[in-house]
Length: 213
Image 1 (cartoon, one colour):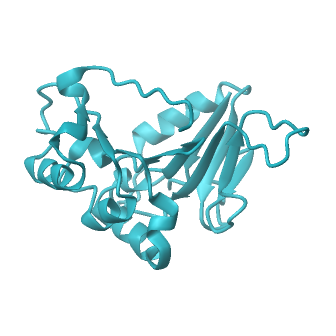
Image 2 (cartoon, rainbow, N blue to C red):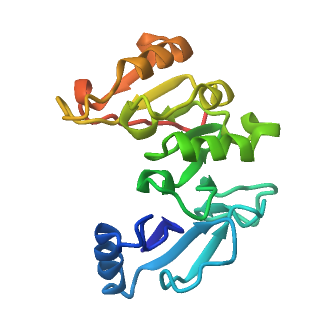
């Protein structure tokens, strides 16, 4: 019912239309029932896409979405799931991966961090943007490794600030990119220990279950 997408430019650095992006948005436009939200950090959306709402990461209130019902009879009751959107930061990137939405998901006292396929440029912007209090935003229990465990992602500053207990790597078995890369695995093991790293290429589907504690 709701589609949340980054404020991605329609044209790449060569001023050529990005075919996959254009095809995707054409499909979205064919389904009027979908409520489209764009994550951005400026009001200069222009005519890139037709949207229903903007999630402005510049606003402490606007970048947070609560999913679920709040009981008015319970003082301080909160929605079950809270999503906080923190990136992408820049208005344009050379690499499409850097438009990845960076967000956290909180259920009760448990928090998960997702950085999508964000690579060096986007991660650098992200760290600089929240550098004064990075851990406040991304300290988490579970970190889904950036870009399938690529050496281009999950920089040390993010791992240090997030200080996760578990890291999950989503990657295909015997994939042609060699994900996850050995350099990333070494960093992950130093952060959470080998026994707290889970990989879809080795273990298949990974399901997390929590009661909020």
